[in-house]
Image 1 (cartoon, helix red, strand yellow):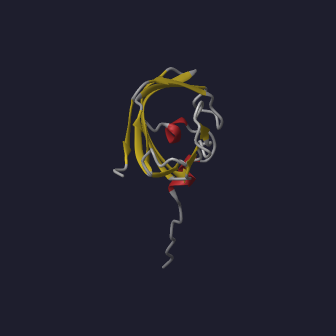
Image 2: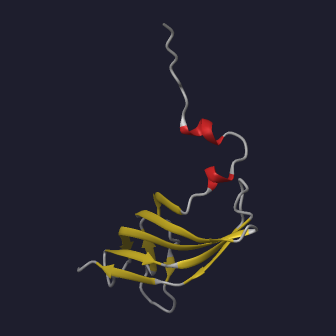
Image 3: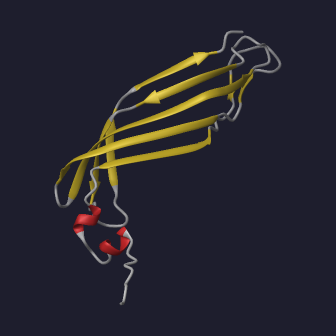
Length: 138
């Protein structure tokens, strides 16, 4: 009696160029990183330390996209990127500003990918959104 074990992964089914393996319609991406904001000087002030110093807060970004039209030469997506910064420190010599703030931005958009079946695909995105800054109570 002879037994044979099949050892195949889903990637084995997609070897070579097979359009069905690239036929996904949803994307989900996430990023974690540091927010770097340059220091800002306040004009026309007489106090000795007139620069607002920003800390380097940690930001969290998530992006969901859904492809709703494949044009052959391009693909049209609807996407919703969002970024959250829960704690951005502030420092100003006169202590007239909050010590920190938190923020979020959500910006729905339409995205056009050119040559979507290639490994590198240029794209353009157009949209608008809403942002919210919440200062700390000091």
